[in-house]
Amino acid sequence: MAARILKIAPDRPARDTVNSGARIIANGGVVVFPTRGLYGLGADALNEKAVDRIFKIKERSRKKPVLVLICKTGHLELLVKNITPLAQRIMSQFWPGRVTLIFDALDTLPPMLTAGTGKIGIRMAGHPVAAALARAVDGPVTGTSANLAGEPGCMRIPDMDPAIIRAADLVLDAGPLQGGIGSTIVDVTGQSPVLLREGSVGIGEFF
Image 1: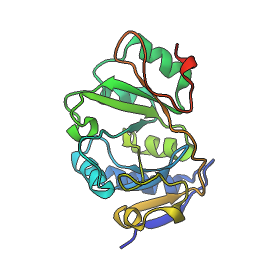
Image 2: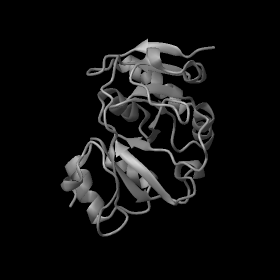
Image 3: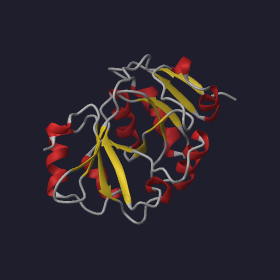
C-alpha cells in the first residue's frame, strides 16, 4: 500500500498537515518531506527501530551514517558530547542553512546514526516545511535523502522511486525543489574547522 500523499505549501506550510507528519514520526513512522535541495526521509533520530526502518527502506549500507536535522540548538544536547567555540561560531554564522557540522556523538545514540564512527552530522533545517516538521516533533529528525542507495536524490515526488513511496507512511509534497549542490560538511570537533565536502557554502567562508 502506497503512502498517503499530502500537498503542502513550501513557504507557508499548513499546521494541520505538518502535525500529521509529526504524529507519524513521533509514533515511529517515516515521512517523506522537502529540504532545500532534495526530498528527505524523516524519522525520529532517537528511535532505533525507526532509524533501522530508514536503512531498510533505502537499502542503505550500515557502514554509512545518517544526517540529522534539528530546529534549535537546544536539541544538540540530545545528540553531541560537547559544542566547541568553533562550532558555536559557525552555527551562529551559517545556521539555519546548507552547512552540515560533524560533532562527537553521544554514546547513547542509535549506532546506525553514526555507523560506528563516533561522530554525527547535524544541520539546522532551513526549508520552511522541514523546519516546521522538526519543531512539531520537538526533537531531532533524520534528514537522509529519499532515494534507494546508489540512486540520485529526488527533486519531484512524481520522479521518486515507487518503492520509497510504498514504504513511507506519509509523503509531504511541496512541489519541485531546487536541487543543486549539496550542503558543505565541516568537522568541528577540534580547534580548527576541517572541510570534508565543499558544497553550497564555499571553503573561503571558513578559513
